[in-house]
Image (tube, rainbow, N blue to C red):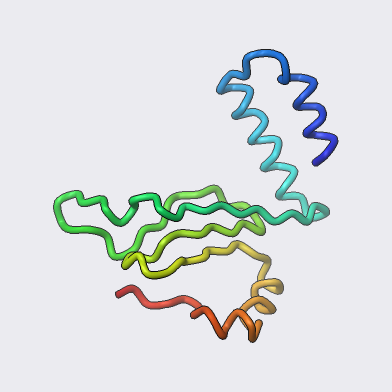
Amino acid sequence: MRKGSEEFKLKYGTKFVSGEDVSKLMNEYGEQMQKDDTECYCSTSWCRFPFYEADFGWGKPLMSIPATVELKNLITLMNTSDGGGVEARLTLKEEDMAIFEKNEMLLAFASLNPTVT
């Protein structure tokens, strides 16, 4: 990561960066993150985006799941539909998810696969 960051600074640090450059960089980044020998965790927060305010004529949504690229070890946070909590979506390896789902400290504060209300 450090090497890639330095290469990026050298290549793009003093000139205009085009959308094509950014797209190429993101594709390269995605390829690196998918490798089995790379252990990296990424997180993003979509909290306070008004996903649940959208109304296409049949009412506001009960659940909103933005389309995302399927990356390993990705954690995405979003507000719940009622605005009273935060949902976390994770993409972990099956064996890592099994450990995560049995974490007592987590289970004291969270529910796994909650129902839509």
